[in-house]
Length: 380
Image 1 (cartoon, rainbow, N blue to C red):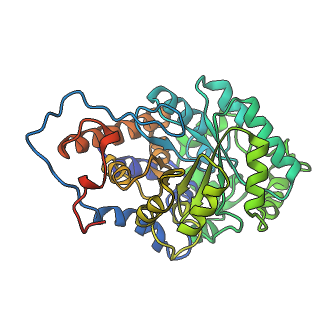
Image 2 (cartoon, rainbow, N blue to C red; image 1 turned 180 degrees about the horizontal axis):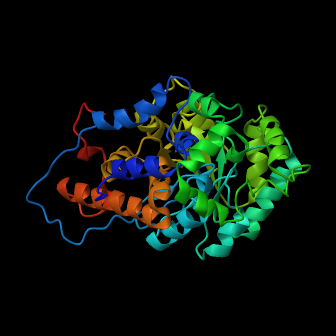
Image 3 (cartoon, one colour; image 1 turned 135 degrees about the horizontal axis):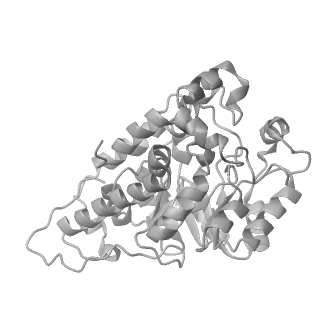
């Protein structure tokens, strides 16, 4: 199969990854209306084609929170990436490092902070969930510091877990071999199974052996179910900012009032995000909220966006609306599930090529010059 698009990688991943883990990546909450809108709303935004301009010597480079990037596209924090492919977070981090874009490791990763640090040279970012166990929370921050992570991405929109029907029906677990359904799915993907058998990284290694009372998968599940803190508030953000002391990015902003409150914390950036349509179904798409949030706080804080980006054209549209950075989650997971590190690299190559060509056909040579003037009036 000749891979030309992110959709090609998605189809390959669907063939190669056990159903429960593929569905975990490729699903939203409840009716999945917000999940679908994240993608479809990008299609409503139209580009202005320009001609007879010099298109030589193009550059897609733009900084994200002071980090030089080959293009302003970071790999988003995604839980269970190591279940799309054995040692998945390590593969993704290595691909991102070689390509010159940021990689963000999730708290709920299969490979640990230390695993990724051991296999990479460039500093990566770490995403933090606020847990009730504050001693464990502090230890996560300390471990990210020790690994020389260059930014902390604090997720604000997962105080309570949204219901994802596919995960419920699949009986999602990082121990699928304990159920007949899980064993059946694994048996259908023997190459995936062989790779998983060959690695020691099969559970949430940021948590197992680090959180009090969590020494195996069984104790992990009961601990995790109780740990997301529904009392999370802006004072917690201030405390975490002080404890961390480095670059801080706040993820999960979808409302202009919250954007203003986030800016007042002194954070370095916010991510306009609805958690990939996996939390509040019926909420607006990320891209539909970007313009208003940029207008509200874009002069005071760096505004990034995630959700629904499936092409380089989507990246350009986000930059044109004022984003200073974008994130891709599912696209790199598709690549990871399809072809491991090579697949993540392919994802980045596809996005970059589309971004570069689209920029040229819009009449610009440098991405930093892209703005709303490059979009068709009335389409955004």
